[in-house]
Image (tube, rainbow, N blue to C red; front, top):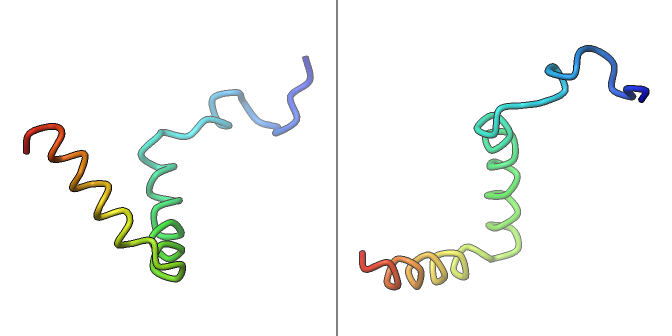
Length: 53
């Protein structure tokens, strides 16, 4: 099998927290621009209520 990314196979993988740190600012920006912040807060509070918190 030919590797398309180059380098070692381990270099192509990122730690999940690094991936989250890379995507989170864009996700927050899009949520603010689109107006989805209220929907996220509503869903989070619903889930918290189901979990008993």
